[in-house]
Amino acid sequence: MREKWGETVSTGPGFSINKAIMAVLIVLIALGALLYTQGCKQPGAIDTITLDEPPVNPFVADSPWPMSHANPYCQASSLYPGPTKDTSEYKFDYLGELMYYPPITVAISGAYPDGNRVLWGNTPAMVFKAGLDGGRLSYIEKIEKEPLNVTLSLIECGLSNAYTLVDCEGTFFVPSIRKIFGYGDEVLGDPYSKIVTKRVFEIPEDQLRSEDEFIAGLNIAYDGMLVFITNKATVGIVSRSFDSAHFLHLGEDEETSNSIACDEDGGIYVVTSKHMYRVQWTGDGLTTNEGEGGWIANYETGGEVGGIRLGMGSGSTPSLMGTGEQDKFVVITDGQDLMHIVLFWRDKIPPDWVQIPGTKDRRIAAQIPVTFGNPEATESSSEQSVCVRGYGALVVNNQLNTTSEDPIINIVMSQYPDVAPYGAEKFEWNPQTQELRSVWVNEEVSLPNGIPAMSAATNLIYDIGQRSGNWTWEALDWDTGQSVFSYEIGSDPQYNSCWAATEIGLDGRLYSGSVTGMMCLHPEAS
Image (cartoon, rainbow, N blue to C red; front, side, top):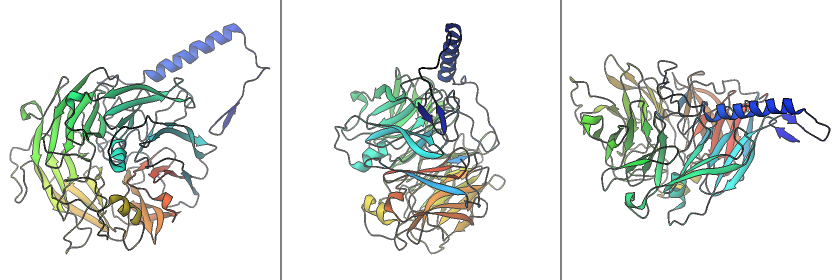
């Protein structure tokens, strides 16, 4: 007997079946497995569901949230609905027992032959699958990872495991220091089977720049190649079968502490401590040569790192704005003491474009301060990627009221009202005037350290917040910034989101990692 998320299936000694029917069943099962493993669309099958939706990458799992930041554009926005203002019939689940570090992101699989899906996640110490058992979140299996023989800090190990994805064949790809692991199901097409390591890729020694080099980010190109960036600014691209790889080393003294974005034209967007790059994947190599589609741009990188910031320069994974015939940009927040939101022209710079006075590069289309409503502000900071939908861009405040330079202490203290940051600000690009402007500020909301998500279906922003020292799930109106609901989780430190992302699943569900586990907000009936 085996329980399947609310359904019981049993076989026993009294069950019998003739050989002919058994043969048919075997053929059908084999066919189902074959279809499951060959679920990838052909490379030309890229379409756009709505004007503001990025093109579908056919090599990513057909899922509401198959990868970090939701899609290769790294917008952290979704067509799927989250909770609405009526949360009276919603329930909260907490799933603990993870070791050492939170799962920064989880990846929702595509549908299995039986219609079920699983959540794939990892920490520096383990890999897990989770599902729904009678409507509640539960582990299907957890396995410990191979021990790491490295001298990196816990934060560096966690950063190296942060960005993951599930592909169209159901393989869960996880970077870990200098390797990428491909995990999957021991029994093909069975969501309840054991986790197995399908294959492992390791960066060759001759491509490493430093003994403390590690993979800092992972994405997937629109031809199905995995793309990664190391903390020492080495870009790599490797086939999902791990049988071919290419590398490009960016500036010798540059570092990265965030992931990367990919577009459908082979553009790979990397922000380092010194520059913003478009690295072009040509199909047989990587280049920043403008004649082949790449470019390098300067931006205000700043100097000091503090609060919960994890690296120099920008604190954000690049987000891509604009689809189809829209104006197209790369969006980051920069490293100035008073942080600015910066838009770079993604493709060719318009021929009549005049460099904005005070900016470091003609490619910059906009650069304006993020003040969170305080016109006298001299400092602001965010560690989170800019959440993008259409021409809108949301920045959350992570500037803590603390003098500590230890990010772990600051993450723990970010729960307390006197230390926690307050404020969120939305910006919007006007294609007619070709200007970016602030359209609203919410000065009261506190979203201390989590990555926000946006639902186009409900027009709401979701993120883990705090109110009076209690952890909450907050929802803001995308158009006005007004609070729509606040769902109280509790004051226990285990609910600290700890850099993790809020993600939108099926049936109005929200997910987020926490210090030692995973959280879910879901309708009571589901």
